[in-house]
Image (cartoon, one colour):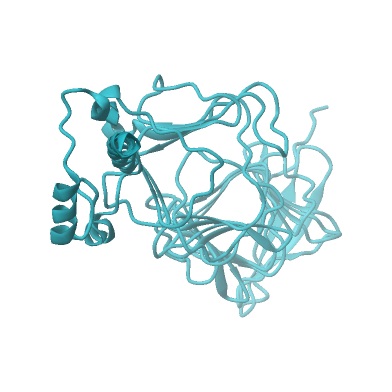
Length: 400
């Protein structure tokens, strides 16, 4: 006996209902499931008559399923038991707007050439594709925008046209910093904070950098704390370019840690040549002039505007500059009458600077020591000569 095949599609028309001609669809499978549906010609409503799931096939492939119990709709191969109100197994392409007040869940891709809006949105294991710009809105306000032309991402109110790969209009709060290979661009000040306190700030107006202060007053402004440079020999270079980077402050360090009393074995070298000197423990060597309390507008190696306290000062001079020549037989000692005339005319000793000269130009400590010694030596010669005259007079008096 031949097995009877169940028809896939049966059309019924009733001549009795001329004004309400009905189209009855009998959908069956090759198995046992059957469903009867009616489509009134007046409004096109499709109603299942038999209490069973509604299924549409093309060939032997089930393409659409409507569950009788829940009304869940499954579209695509394998979506025979839909678990949501609309269950699509495959990609969705929308050329218009897509709007939902519920959730959209996808394990594949969602592509749209227009707008997709949803009350709730959750990421999926697939991709979301849009032919235009992509925007997230809450309560009708854009919160995140992705430009279709360049992929720039804008976050925050007003960041619907981002001008960089990541454009944030508002504050950024992070419990951990992640480095990036690109650049960070901000039209305002840049601040890094921890526990609500600014730790590092960069001002937009002048580029001043503050550490521990939100409003730095100089190019680098550090508020409190110490600076620790571990390992090696820290060197601070200055200059307008690579060619000028031979001006530096170098701190010669050691492998031992510093203590409150100073450096362990190293010193500080300020020079334009690494090989200029090797400062010892706690030593400071400067190749150049030093000015304390005054602008460096002179040729002095050390200019101090104030008092200098010292237990000893050593001045190194050549032997030719020292006035031992006064005692040479070739030295002409001025007579006392010549000395008197010079004093009456100039009001100071010869070779000694006047008060006006000292006030205007100061005086050299080394030169002044030599001049004073010269006068003492000349005075010694005068005393010796006078003593000879006194002794001669005594002898004359003793003979009388």
